[in-house]
Amino acid sequence: MTSRRPRGHAGKTPARQSAQNRGPAGRRDYLAASSRQGRAPAAPKAAVWRRQRAAVVAVAVSILVAVGVLAFRGGGPTPGAVTNPAAFSLPALNGNGRVRLADYRGKPVVVNFFASWCTACQAELPGFRQEAIALKGRVVFLGVDSLETGDKNFLPSLVHLAGAFAALARDAGPDGNGLHAALGGGNTMPLTAFYGAGGRLLDVERGALVPVGALKAKIARLIGVTS
Image (cartoon, rainbow, N blue to C red; front, side, top):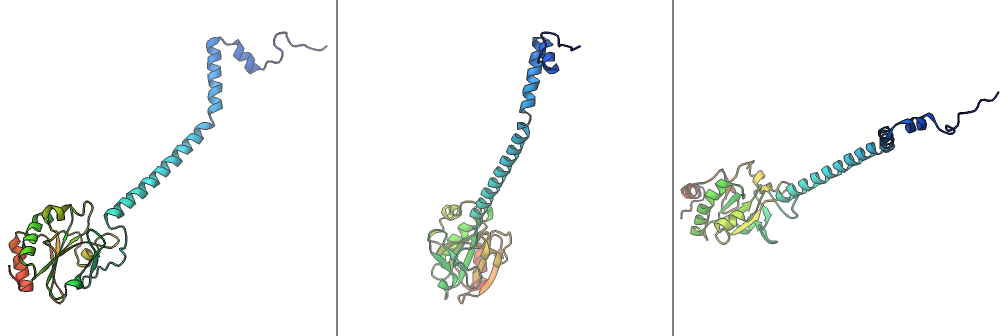
């Protein structure tokens, strides 16, 4: 004897029967659960995409920071620059010129290093400007911006060094402090190097020469010139 399914239930699976047997609220819950199950595979893909995007952003930020630091600190070797204290040749602070120790052979030279962030430099530079004007023709004063992290023209403009100093240069080298480092400056700022008329390095002063009498005494003792 062949059994027959009860009428009204043909083709319905238990899951569909269960869904239909539920009330309106039960059917809504069932449909919501089915929808969530259908979207489940997308969640891991979205998480992977977010991680990849975060990694790309992190790399981009690192590159920008590195470029910014290099731009502030010299950005790499400067073609034609020489940071040997006995024969330095540095790019001009502004423009395309060069500042060479050899160009001033025959006169004593005072080389002062400064940076925009250096408050001690700001304290001593007015005295240097005063002596550079007083000794003009007998002692050459050169200014070198080194270890810079800001505006290279801040102190020269503030103290009006152009004209008083024979020339202004910017330090060279991978970290923008090649000559400063070669003179043993380390992290010291300001730094002042004194050269004889023959180009020989006589002394290096680490720290500010203030008041101006300290600078005058140094020049008189090392070079034998007074203002």
